[in-house]
Each structure stands twice: as C-alpha cells, then as structure tokens.
Amino acid sequence: MGVLSTLTEEMKNAMRSKDSVRLESLRAIKSAVLLAQTSGADSGELTDEDSIKLLQRLVKQRKDSAAIFRDQNRPDLAEPEEAQASIIEEFLPAQMSEDELESTIRSIIEISGASGMKDMGKVMGIASKQLAGKADGKRIADTVKKKLGA
Image (cartoon, rainbow, N blue to C red; front, side, top):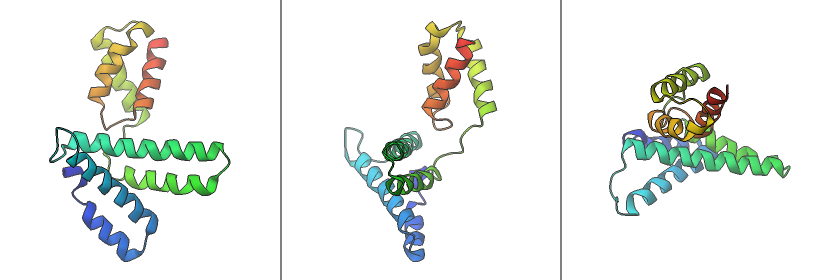
C-alpha cells in the first residue's frame, strides 16, 4: 500500500483543519481501498499498480459526474466533485506532459511497426501497459489516434 501509506495521517490533518471536502475525498479513498482489499480472490494487500488503478478510477468517476452536472447546469454539484478529483489526484504519480506522451507513443508505434488506424489496438495494448499511472487512458487513445491517423 505504498501509494496510500500517508492516507491516515492526511485524514487526521484534514480533521484538524476542518477541511470537509478533503476529508470526504480521503474517506472515499480509504473506503475504496478497504473494499478492494476484502473483496475478490486477491483479498489482502494492494500492490502499487492496483492502488494506482483504483485512484484513477475514483478520479474518473468524479470527473464524469462533474461533467454530467455541468451539462445539466448544476455547478453547485459539479464543483465539489471537481474538488474531490483534484484531491484524489494528489495521491497519483505525476502525469506525463503532452510532449513526453507524444514521444513515447511515437517510439511505441515505431517498435510495434504500426502503420495505420488498423493497428491501433496493438499500439494501445502496449501503450496502456507502459504508461499505466503516468497518463490517462483517454489522453493515450487521443494521442495514438493522432499519430496513426497522420
């Protein structure tokens, strides 16, 4: 649980500072971690990779909810979701810049020998594994489409 090792201390600090949004976000992380640890055949300690996937899923859920609320003209509901997403993102590794992502995708395309959109699945499989936790899946897919379509 290396990625989430500071969670309890962060929760204490949020309680002391009476930061309800941060505390709610941290509790959501803790709840998801406990659920993941106790469910399924792999019950027990989470690996760093599992922790990153879990945190990415929580961030994606918050951002999707915020987008829906914005579409429905409900900024009062969207803002807390966006705040929680940014707090959860603090526990994720630093994301790659656009230039780093493009150069990595370019090298994956060269190595795999992809020549067009028909090879997108092959490139995405390699890229998703190699860039797990470093870039959002949507960003990876958009960059791959751009590079293969060009």
